[in-house]
Image (cartoon, rainbow, N blue to C red; front, side):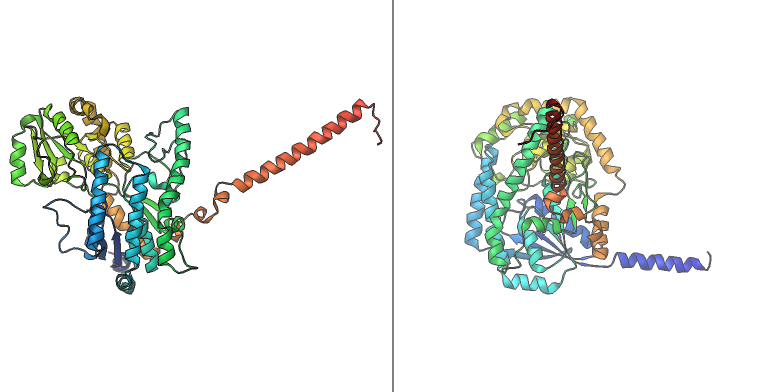
Amino acid sequence: MTPLGPLLLLGFISGHLTLTRSAKILTVVLVGGSHYLLFDEISHILHESGHNVSMLVQLGNPRIKGVNYTGRNNSYRVISWSANEEYISSFNSWFLEQQKSFFEGSESLSTFLKFMGHLALQCELILGDTSLMDSLTAEQFDIVLIDAFNPCSFLVAEKLRARFLAVHVSNFWSWYLAGLPSPISYVPAARSMLSDRMGFWERLKNSAMFLGSWLTERMLYSQFDHTIRKCFPPGSQPVLSELYLKAELSIYNTDFTLDFPRPLLPNVVYVGGLLSKPARPLPQDLEDIILTAGDEGFIVVTFGSMLASVNLPVVLEQINAAFSQLPQLVIWRHLHTHWPSGVLPAQNVKLVDWLPQNDLLGHPKTRLLVTHGGLNSLMEAVYHGVPVIGIPLFGDQFDNMVRAEAKGFGLTVQVNQLQALGNAMATVIEDKRYKASALTLSHIHRSHPFPPRQRLVQWVDHIVQHGGRHLRPFGLDQPWYQQYLLDIILFSLAIVSLAVYIVTHLLKFAVGYLCSGGKLKVA
């Protein structure tokens, strides 16, 4: 080694330690279900990478229904907040009724507006808890990672006057929150049920849907106007649309293995697949059940972390009847205590309160995943090369299943067409093209140059060290009429109109002059 060798090595080690210094990080998740699961994983990953991580979590909302899931032990610190018991009971009763309506195929904008109204009320209570907010402010976190689904997370970060990163738990359908360029010709709008391959009428529909989604977004987030006026002093009241764009980095829980290719900005990254891991050995009792499946294998059934307690005999009976037609064993996650007594599970159906979904999908005898179309479930299916049947119920699940169908590894069955479920499952299991597509996507996803965990940690480290100003396009600060060149277009139209006006009048003058024999008429 040359004399400079030790110095260079010491410099490299010193620089590496500087770049990876421990930071105080706060993660904020104020809703449950898959949001909580994802932030639990993110918080744990950042803790394992050497950061001092705390997670602000709202108790009382439905989080994880399952006797075997207790979260992380000996990992990040939990800071919990909860509304009063009376409100929690009222909200959860309302939310359970909405879950039932999803299974009845009656999702509506008015329901989502009411849900946003609940989130706004909860936010008012959180921001009004001076003890909580003062203690969080005193901690002086280096960076805050927030759940972009809930506008309250942005308001919490603003109240703390903290730098923050926005984590989008769904696909790119919330493009407007990050100011992403979205060419309407091949980027499908939210809930359009379109792929990126659009003909004339599809592009016409997509254009209308883009306008509609913009108007809907304004309606949804106007639910927080009263909260902002009450919790922030006049003169410093934030505007949500500006807060969304204030994030130093926008992190999307998706991957182009599943999503459609589209343009991104330098301050937008994707980390889809954080919950996907190599399968671990199953508990012995579950492995014993699987042994009874034989060569036919088994099917994994789960409708998400918050929908395992819905008691709808008609719907469950239809799904159960479809399973009875198949030779495969069916492992179905549904709480025994909420299973209707009048419905007898089919002989090949095994009900469980909780299942290790990732480990089951990685089992060699897994033939199919039946899911509501949640993004985390689909990414796990992609990782393990398992085809899917999706029964979308609300939110981005409809769009997620459009992507699964377009990628060729699954089919969609609408909740009001469950009579087609049996045939759809048989088709996906027997037609080897679905399995082949799933395996191809798995190989693509796993061969990404940098796995999602590494992308997350390195980008967070980068922002902690250097901030995100150098990644932020100036266009995000431009007025909308400048960004879309409307002032240039109007100016150009005015110049062209003036030129046409002058030329027209010159031509009229010339024609009149020629028609009069070259003599000008004098009035």
